Length: 143
Image 1 (cartoon, one colour):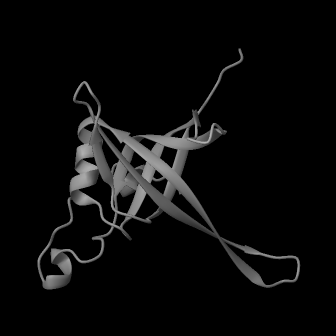
Image 2 (cartoon, rainbow, N blue to C red; image 1 turned 45 degrees about the horizontal axis):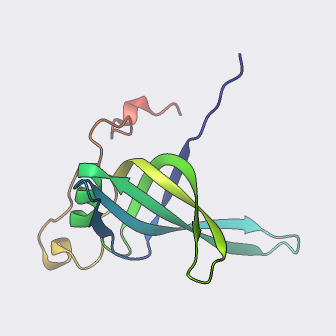
């Protein structure tokens, strides 16, 4: 049986604050980008660092939660799918972008400039999608 799979897991830091918008029907949608670092050993034996940037789209209540609790620099785990989208620029040039449509965004750390740095606690303590399988149960880790 042949099947298809479109699933992405990314762990990185927000490069900007989320931007919340609403469709004409009133549905919330948040957009933000994350930076994901990769360290590898080059042919010369030296360690190299490479950073990739990904645009994330989060719909509905999850998008509202991302907009409310996430800020630039905050680490997140994003679970979702790849989506290609085409559009035409004002100059008439056709462009295609690849984005990640998030099913689940797990908030990590406490972010920058929040109440935790002032002695309080502002960690949301939940993911943007409460139905995700990415719980904090260490007993479920297979190693």
